[in-house]
Image 1: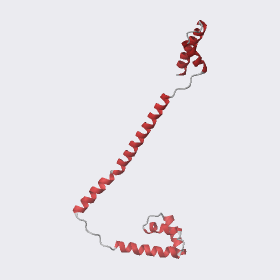
Image 2 (image 1 turned 180 degrees about the vertical axis):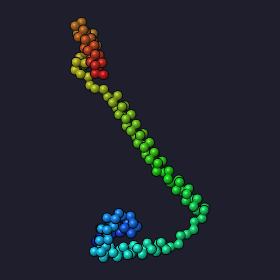
Image 3 (image 1 turned 60 degrees about the horizontal axis):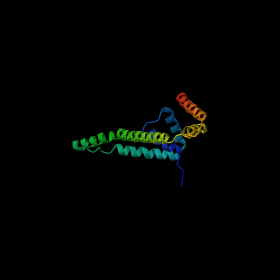
Image 4 (image 1 turned 135 degrees about the vertical axis):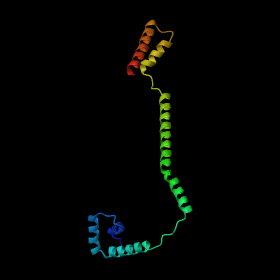
Length: 150
């Protein structure tokens, strides 16, 4: 099996006048050196000539109106589809954020050692008044620390 010339992909654009002058000059130079591309260009030219010579069928007004309706209907599908995808994406982001907030609010950090001791001291009725004073001081300090952290 023979490999296709890479320049052959540009011949259709050259034939249709879709390339700039510099590219056209480069293709013409290549055509003078590559028999395969020259033959392909002649084939493309003959197909183009045959298609141009074909009669254009008459289209009834009914068919034209029907085509117009279909074109109009499909023209709006792109933006509608994009809006649907964006709405689904926004809903997904809202759900993920809501779940993250729920998870964060349900888990609280483990209490520090001194916080556990303060709770034990205040709930223990057999402790001395000194222990109760220390516990009250610790709890008061905890409230101040929380206020400073905000």
